[in-house]
Each structure stands twice: as C-alpha cells, then as structure tokens.
Length: 80
Image (cartoon, rainbow, N blue to C red; front, top):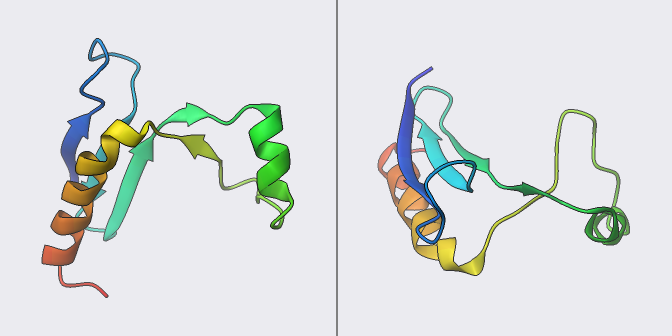
C-alpha cells in the first residue's frame, strides 16, 4: 500500500484528530474521523444498513479544504 498523507484537522493538537490520506495503489481516499454517536448512527440507518466492514464517521466542516485536496490528488491518479 502506498499511503499518501494529505493533512490533519488544522484546529486540533495534531494527535488523535481527523486525518485524510490517499492510497495511491488502491486508488482510495482514506479518512480518520470521530465515530458517529448512537443518535447520528440511527439517523444514518434510516437510509439503509451499515455493513460490519464499514463505519459512519464525522468530520468538521473546516476540513473541506483537506477533503478537496485529497480529491484533487485522487483525480490526478486518473481514476473515474
């Protein structure tokens, strides 16, 4: 796996915070975020089940530039 670090949440202390990477080999965006609480998870489940192999995570809106950068990196990999 070739994991390319993009950025961490700029408004945190730099540890245990939302983070974004791009996996060049798998051609995936990888996100670390806060686990969804029961209320949010229940709302998400109204749309459909969340498989055991997936998770609902939260990211602060201030990370939009980080996500855009991750998307730009992914776009440059040429996968659509």
